Length: 110
Ligand SMILES: [Cu+2]
Image (tube, rainbow, N blue to C red; front, side):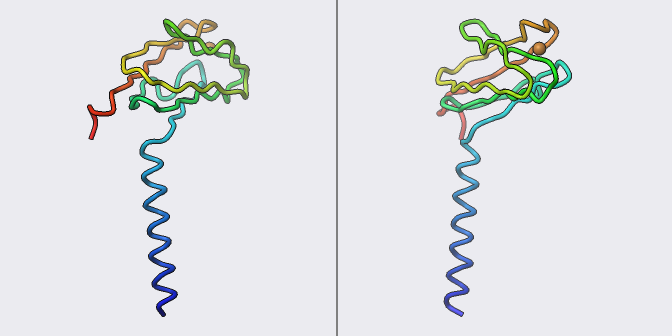
């Protein structure tokens, strides 16, 4: 009986840890049908963002100051953002594709 209770506690502890790591974890944006999905995301400083391209077309993630280069179909691009700010970005191959990334300081969120 005591062992079973201990097992339940351990499962609870591991679940709690998993939740915490998710909250501060990486974000993913899909590039599909000539759109960034979601088009706008908000992250805290130090978060890694991955743009995935499950589309049949190549795309880019291009902003002022940084650029993914061409991301071929099936590939992805990751970047960690350490500076707060709003980054408007677009795909240089498809000018109607636009997205927005908002990076907030760690202290501005609770
Ligand atoms: Cu594109």
